[in-house]
Length: 172
Ligand SMILES: O=C(O)CCC(=O)C(=O)O
Ligand SMILES: [Fe+2]
Image 1 (cartoon, protein in one colour):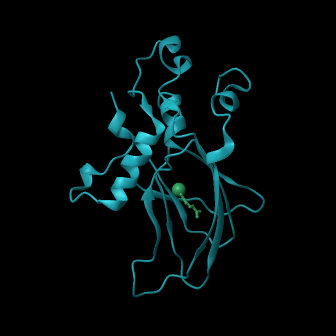
Image 2 (spheres, rainbow, N blue to C red; image 1 turned 180 degrees about the vertical axis):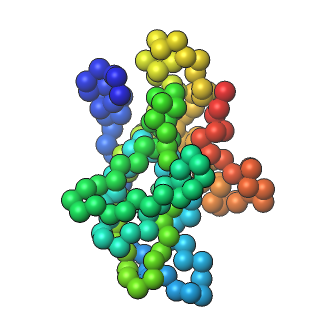
């Protein structure tokens, strides 16, 4: 990333909020939307996904088309999360992704979410802003605040899609 070695490990030294999920997606049926996980960005730092050979994970391209992240034997998918997008002043983008269930097979995946302590302050690092001669693209925020807003998207879903809180909430 162009940062001193060990910078991120030091910035984010608390491993107490990381989590691992094991997911099972049932085969698609013709009678439902076949949606496994709807389109979203991961809110954390970085996510590692191990998937089986079934497929269905898709990433939204800049042209608005969904690109399949086809399984590659022995490889893991690395998702940049919103925190890394902000720290890098949008040099690294948090990809919009989803899982579409496929007919005929159960899909299994394991996702590891590298996370931050809720008290952590998140803002573009000087290396990607002032020192790079770039204006900061985000206001700083406490990680917990963003997590609460994202949770509210789920507990009190806004009626207008434009009111759903994304990381763009902190755009400058
Ligand atoms: O199951 C997958 O491949 C991805 C899961 C995912 O995107 C998530 O849990 O945030
Ligand atoms: Fe995700």
